[in-house]
Length: 157
Image (cartoon, rainbow, N blue to C red; front, side, top):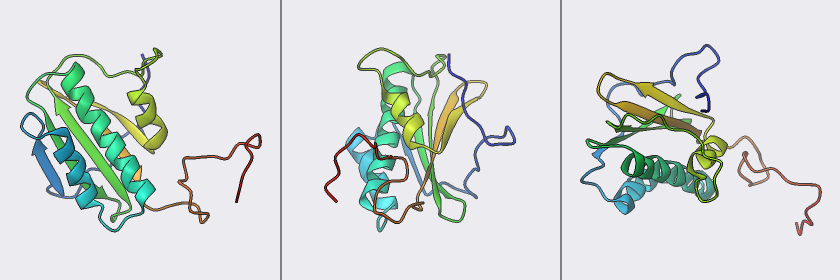
């Protein structure tokens, strides 16, 4: 089982101040609608940042349906003065999320690579799987900060 990252002080991620920017019942909201809600919230952000956020939100919602149990809920918060997106997905299943080494089961590995941090909070009757993604690029070359260039690749730029 993988250890779930936390903040440098061991704390949970920064929660959004007050109500989430988006909250929905994932048992009544389709995956395409949830993805659209992420895109609408991040309107004006760069394409790569938005698509990473959509991928992470979709993976967490899909895992809640595949491995969890109803009721399921999703929330999106803009945190750190709008510089980060916090995605939270609740389900009442008892299983602890973990990264799988099997082919075709790479969802949480993608979450781990794209999110600045992620983890699980246990509650008496449900769990919350969360991921935090930076919305501010740390590079000026137009590439996502989480993608690195390999010296073995032939570059055309």
